[in-house]
Length: 338
Image (cartoon, rainbow, N blue to C red; front, side, top):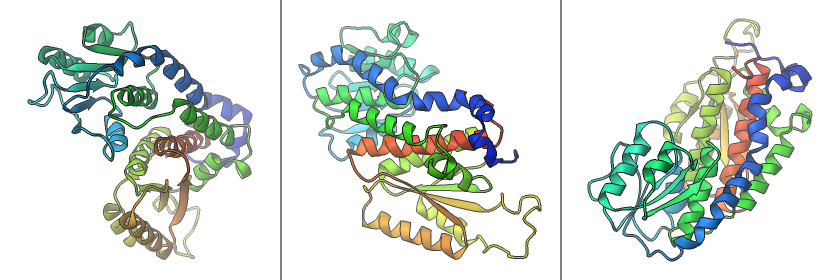
């Protein structure tokens, strides 16, 4: 396991090596603006379409669409993870394909066209997916990025046109991403950079990440993925029922333990709580239990918070903060670009 050196977080050479991870995060807002502008010309035609019987989403952020739509979607919604489509899907339904790699999106497109379903596809215009999905019942949202969040936002814009989703403001989301990029800029010192601070807090620990609302839980899983990729370490995102036993079984710190002994610090968990203000009484109670267990075991407690703005803006904000922290964790471990 690589040794974390906090001096790398303000070292120009180490940060330059980490540019491969940091630059895409810094450019996320601009990337979303381009995607939204490219999709805008085709959205008007969707408003002329009638309401479908049901909505099926396929792709990397299908579950994000479900998290956003479930409270208000006027028709049944399914985030489909498998090849093919459910047997009941037919010409009265809309199938949304959020790009993606491999056989699944191509197979789902084939099935949707065979059954006469309407298609909404986010893909590069010159891609195989765009070519295979072309038809008179297909709306192509042209994409120039592989960023799953950008594709999800443009799909939400399209579904709003169909009367199935609340209005999604891509500019507000892009502005929020820009604000995170500014606050977490490599040029900002550790003392005033929340992402570097979180990376420092996770440097010698095994992160346990929890989000109480549906969107916060979704963000926790994406952040855990980013932490694992950046550090090569375990990072677990899970429900409170799964994390509470891990915290309860953690012994308080031994004041006589040798801090330089291998794995003394690295074997301990650290709890990261994602708070977006969208939880309910049950999630608030679960959070309190988690935090009390963490304090009892002397486990480090960190927070990622954003409790204002639209739901999807809150999601994008905490997600970007966590991804910046993951990138800086990789920089501090000398794994940037690994």
